[in-house]
Image (cartoon, rainbow, N blue to C red; front, side, top):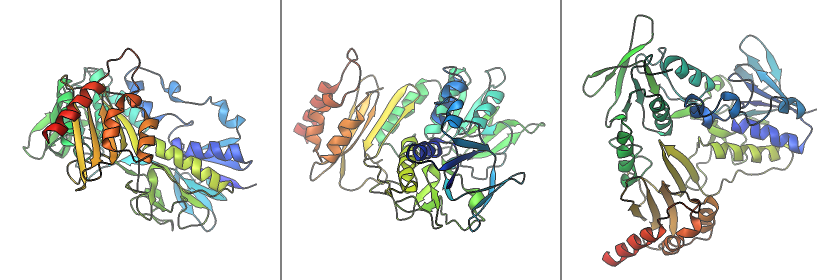
Length: 435
């Protein structure tokens, strides 16, 4: 019986296992050194905030795996011998495979800061990271202040977590406005104000120089590069992005760049070896305008579904469709559909219509082609919109006038929520009249 081994029990690895089982009787083994069972990684923050317990983040009963004949092996893979198709584990165990799926996800970036490996300096990615922050920042008596380094989505999640326990937070962001490499300036500026309104000490254009230790090897303070200021703290969140978790492949003959290089079928350069999820990098460039590596939950799930078909004898290409994503900036919900580029690096043809509500917690930015008026994408903050509606409009190549006039069709907010489409349309029409 063909044995499929999957390294990694995140959304990508578990999805490919489930769909292989739906379509075959192959032997399946999932390998992970992190936890015994699959859990929802995006829910880690809500455990710390007291909204749920860890067992609530496990979508499947523990009996699910045995019932579906999916074997689980807890262990850390040190090396892969692709010639003999053998995995070698820390401690000396080995495991042979017929087909191998690498789904090892991401790890937090570290940039060689002095003190970055001290107790209390950490990212927020794994169950172990959650355990660490619970240990080092259980309350505002044990943790007098936390410093977060890096202004991305994980950084804002960590800030919200600590804020929920009334732990003072200083937030160091290298850029001159929060996430302005992704968001247009109007949105980025609104997020700056929103963070400060939550009594978080946001420091823009600021870099970490070093993390200092106390006599017990724990975080004591950080030093800021630009001013030399020293800030006392007990926790340092290292949230300056993530990178593919592939260090264990450096001695193998599986080709890597930043991630594991794959083609559109998610195949590596080695027969019967595949890579999916955050650790996979498209060899021939991004699909459409997409990045070559996409550390996003839903793309990992899609890759798992596609690869399962290929492994079960129905070869498919990975075609993710129109880009979309969602996140939360403290209590402000964010959605994006299609492409809305930041001001830095925005294509010359891309024009933006920006609307912001007077309460400074709701806005949209619509991107369109300045010559053809073709709708390119939309960002929304504080207003829920329907994914399927924008996906259809992008496929139908609607123009910006159509999108703005038909925004009520896309609104996802419940019946008794206040709607803002009339105000958005009036602002848009007024802009057209003044242009």
